[in-house]
Length: 320
Image (cartoon, rainbow, N blue to C red; front, side):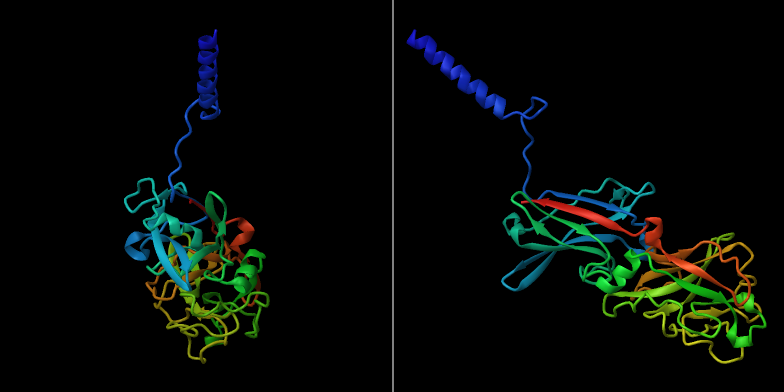
């Protein structure tokens, strides 16, 4: 009888161990490796690798007053919004540092250009949990566009533009676009200056959608000052336009811009890496209006891309 009781007790212990060591599907739980990176992102646009390079996901480890950055991998965005590697394959992110140091992980960023704290699109301050470190990446982080400018974008703020050509006294007013009113006054009152030193600069564009052609309005940090080339190389003889971002295309044969309200043109403003001036828009668009479709001296709106749900955001989790 004692042998039977002993055998039954052993069976109960073994069954109990098996019961509590199985998951809901009756299978042994999968071992979770320390340092496993789980990352997702929305609204990042595909990069032309030959022109713009790749995105990099970074992790900062802070210890004893020192910060060390680790690249978790370079990636791109596929045609359906999926995260892929440089060859278009599914991306696997890897932390190659000491996994014991993950308790000191503080920041995560997505950047272009090879530096973890310059030209950062979105970033996060990380939170520590017993099994992982996590964060939500957004443009308002101090390592991205900053609190004030980021808040203006995420608040849905917007501005105006007008069709006019001040450099030829509006003789060809459908060939010029300015981010001001007809007198050159500020019409972007709720959008602060882009902070300098972040690795970004703003650039205005018109897009001829019939030919998929892009023409720069100029690069600038502030909607309240002139852009880097004033009225542009195609301006007329009457000065350099307003002290606001804008462009005149009035010289014959200079550029094929003849009628900005013919239904083919849109206007948008991008955030461009400050090291990159290749003549094409970087795919980090902040403001957009699809159809210009106004007359001379009239104004229209340029809306934050947040209103259309197109501002990037991401999530990261690393097991520790």
